[in-house]
Amino acid sequence: GEFQASEKLLAAANIISQNPQTLQLRYLQTLIDISTNKNSNTIVFPLPIDLLKSLDKTTSPDLKQAP
Image (cartoon, rainbow, N blue to C red; front, side, top):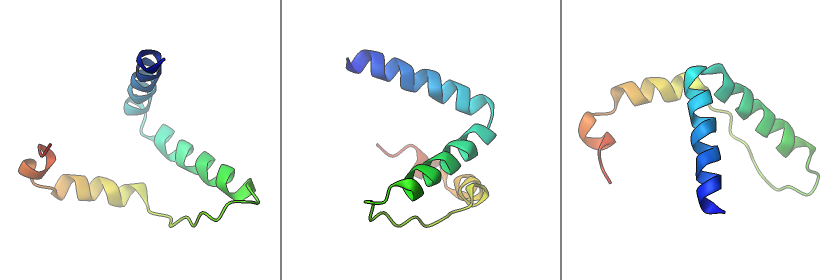
């Protein structure tokens, strides 16, 4: 159960890490899924992926290693 799920997540992470555009495509697919669900009360705040990358570069190494 959980072990197989973790293996699949690891495989997906490896694929995504090799091609950054796959994360953007997954994000867009999620927006499509949310928009087609008529019973959803979800509010989506678009956030450019590039902004997250720049925040990651400015984060100090001490904060990245926090548990």
